[in-house]
Length: 132
Image 1 (cartoon, one colour):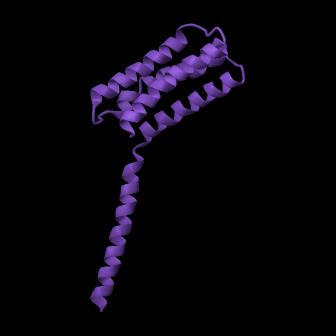
Image 2: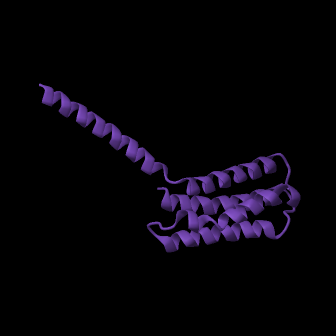
Image 3: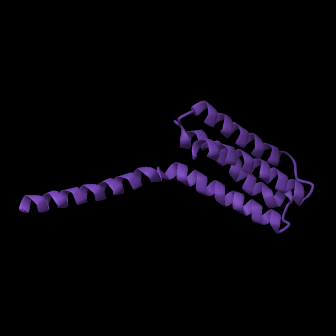
């Protein structure tokens, strides 16, 4: 009877530790999570600013500059992947979209929104491929 109880306790602890280990592995590291969190925050600031009518280069420039800098961290944060070449193409598309948004001041909020949508589309394409 004692051996049966010990076996049950051992199996229970093993299952618990397996769940803890799987959760830890699923979370990933702080670097890629941080890059994505800051990108999401900057995109949110841009979206709220555009909806509030703050669409000048001064209103958008700081957030776009941060997104541009974060674009340089994509490969170091996420490589290797299942398809490094494809990921690098997505990262390049993202950097190009941000660069176009920074290149000249938007004429109005509609144009600023279109630029933000172009950046979002590059993010969505990568997420569909790599996040499933």
